[in-house]
Length: 518
Ligand code: FAD
Image (cartoon, rainbow, N blue to C red; front, side):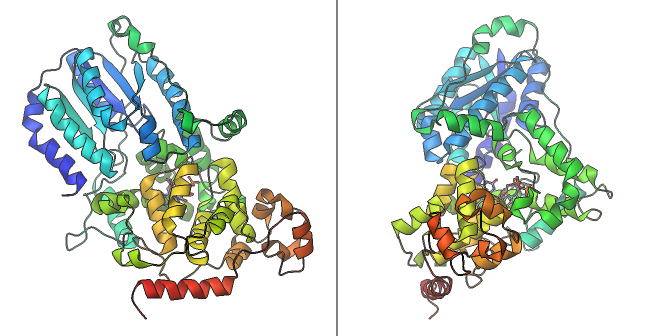
């Protein structure tokens, strides 16, 4: 049974009993990857319920160091989440809603601690949005039942996707594994369901008495980062100025993008030096912004007031936001992708190289391929990498270095501020040709051609690889072979760690062998 089905069964099997539960002293919304007040379905429903029954609403967030560890959450992402909680706390306080934050060391203890808290607060109704990762679905399925045993109703509602997993099926009733027909169905679904892009109201104010009654909860502090996820002071300052947190910032960013850049998105998005994309992934991953709000705002900017037709940039951007939904649908339907297993099982047999020196050179941006090195250094410095470059370095790791793509997937999660399991896993599957809707394995990105095409003037490379700053012309893409080897070497820039043609041939042979197609 798929974990999503376990949760659905738990919810539908207990619906009648849950509906009979009388609201007692409070209603609780459990924040997870939805750190916002605007357009948050579960928070909205919790607020409605509290208002209807005249009881206060409490916001709750559980920090679990072990959960951060299990999810490989990058320190930069932990810092972003904790900073966002500060903003959320202050936004909720303006509505007289407390945000209670507690650290629970072991992730297995989270459900028990939640039950204790609900008991202490006399809360008889718990609301949360669905998360589609396997562990979370299983946990929520059993929490729904455990709550019921204590006379508490738990509602877990779909919110993170524009169109929720399970809503789209092919003509034969099967889940799509190819993006293009899936996307057509996604657009048709939204056009056919007028309410899909309706936004949920912010929660209403708590009754005046809540301030006094819940005084202690208002005093709960946001903890600092756990020991193993701490940033240095320099990193904190750097990331904080690059990535301001909170939903106001997210909305500002979305507005600026839609007013100024979305029109040119289609033409410019693939050029990393142009800064033409929205940089909203961190907000979508932390839930400071909903994907519904993104698609609705973009649609409203379109002359057709629809997802299709009209401005090409807007259409393309919407189709990119849809990729996020697509990978969550894939994860919900084929949950084994969460278990270190390639989407295509036949790719389990590839004989990877486990060359640690190569892996280190890749991580440190010292492969001798300037576009790869620039991208890997951008990742370290910003906690972010441009999408085109994610594909280039992903392909380079899996094909040129023949390193197990899971090493790259893991490294990305450990460093990305926007680390999101489904999108990251999907991106790695695409790049390594082991995933759903992948590049065929024999189509191998040539990093030199990618560099010449998408960073023709070399601005991106010069920005991130200072050793190559002084190199002009097209030698920037391959200084050693294009007469600038000595200059590059003097400045400490490494020679290529693998030859393009040799490694391409090796990858083709090894993939073919792994697939048993000799
Ligand atoms: P924009 O181009 O402005 O796109 C808008 C939004 O659409 C993004 O914020 C993102 O939420 C979504 N989106 C765009 N492209 C994709 C895509 N290919 N797959 C899924 N969603 C997409 N994205 C993550 O959010 N988290 C990850 O951990 C992640 N890992 C990746 C790993 C690899 C190997 C690859 C190839 C891609 C990965 N992506 C990931 C997808 C994509 O690179 C980022 O979403 C994008 O670069 C974020 O920049 P942006 O917000 O400016 O995107």
